[in-house]
Length: 193
Ligand code: GRF
Image (cartoon, rainbow, N blue to C red; front, side, top):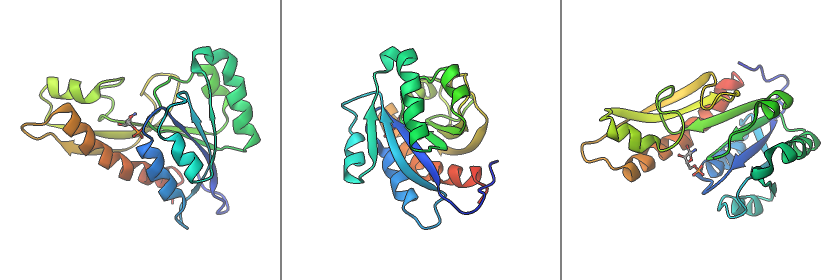
């Protein structure tokens, strides 16, 4: 894990694509005195991402990038992150896959939260797949991001029991509540606090 040298909050960028409920919980976490992070930038691939409203409300700089041109914009994103001295990227409901080149070039830490008990159910539609397989439990995972999808070293997980008449929507809601608690705990663990 990473030692937090000298209690300076780690400058963090959050990458979102949608509602931004994880972003909201990370903003709340970052405002705590003991939080090891400050949120300095928000990146999205989706100009309509509701989470971008949180950037405005919390006076956090934001930028939308067209990830269809990933190779063209990668260096732009890296330059923006460098300009803002970003040391930590938290992917939070971010639906694009960062290239190996980006991950290698970014010298900080990249974390992701995934709505399943990895290594099970990498990729999309995790709740539907867990229900189709009659799983007894699902949950969420925070992991380091490497060049393979949802395959980086696991930091923390939280199990969620699947009820008898669970639907993918009810399970998503249950897991999301745990995601909001898990991400801050995982960040604290990464900085070994
Ligand atoms: C969450 O389940 C997250 O794990 C997944 O996208 C969903 C929405 O996240 N990647 P958010 O509300 O946009 O943070």
